[in-house]
Length: 66
Image (cartoon, rainbow, N blue to C red; front, top):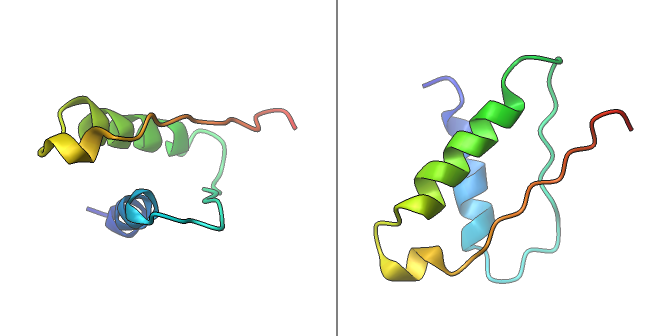
């Protein structure tokens, strides 16, 4: 999977109890950034493997047009 490093970074970020940074994905328009994040949120938070995995309520911010 070519984006595995991004998914691992997202997993690591949500597991950090005190993140002091944000993640930003950069790429050409239409390369699938939003799709990748939406799929990750769907898989990670809709059907959590363990009950404690679902403690966060993820939000997504788009800077489209900024």
